[in-house]
Amino acid sequence: MALWLLNHLSTVALAVLMVGAIVLVAVAGSAFARRRFPRLAEGEHNEMIGVVLGMFGAIYGIILAFVVVTLWTQLDHAQTVVSQEATDVSLVVRDTRAFPSAERARVDRAVHDYVHAVVEVQWPLMKEGAPSFEATSKQVGAMYDALQAYDPNSARDQAFYGEAVSRLNEAAAMRRERINIATTELPVLLQVLVYGGALVIILLTFLYGLRSLKMQFLFVATVAGLIGFSLLLVLVLDRPFAGDLNVSPQPFKESTLAQFWASGRP
Image (cartoon, rainbow, N blue to C red; front, side, top):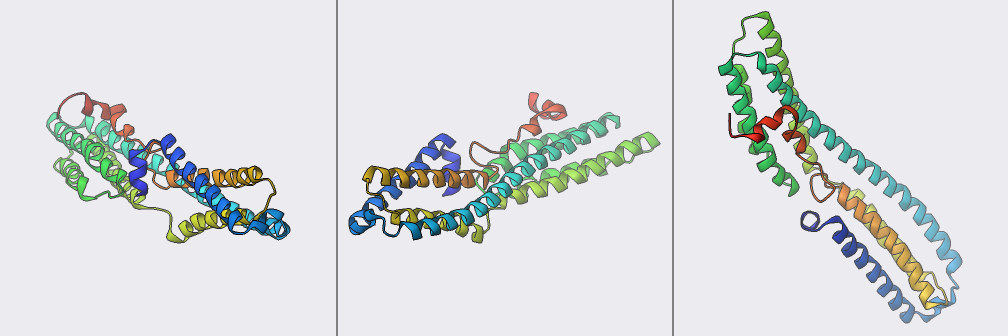
């Protein structure tokens, strides 16, 4: 459900829907509690509720800050991994420029197939939260086959060959890391703490009584709105390859790899 929302709604639309829904439900819940228990408006329990709300708010704030920082770090790491993988593949192409034309063409064809498979096949799968190693396994194998088919003779060729193999190994490692990130989500325990904590705080605001009905609704709506935006941030950051705030495959179309998008297969 979360992935569907991220992939089919803009961040602005998702904010209006999610935050608006939370605020409306909170205000409706507050109105129901006030009608069901009219004495809440007298505020006789405000001192106790204020202490509990402050304590819960502080604990929840620490948990939320930890989660947001962790998810933001994960997003930044995902961007780094994608850039590094694209850089390593690009350097494979550069290193093989020292090879004879036939071997160089074989590597170019394999790299062309790989970057197209990553962007056109594997990326949509990652957006849906179901990446597949098999989506690019054949293309990775073809790149290794292209390098292994060449037997360098001169010291110069051997140096570039060794560097190309090393870069390809690093690209394969980054590919695995990228796919692992695409399948990772916030642990269930942290999800319970984040979403359950939000529910507890909103429920506590129902018990904090104010004589003015407008001020009561304003208080509840403000707290609910802040929590709604916090939950929206968690939702968006938890899926680094989905939604508007996503990791782009653009590095696979830039620099040396741009040649594989400007024309047909080498």
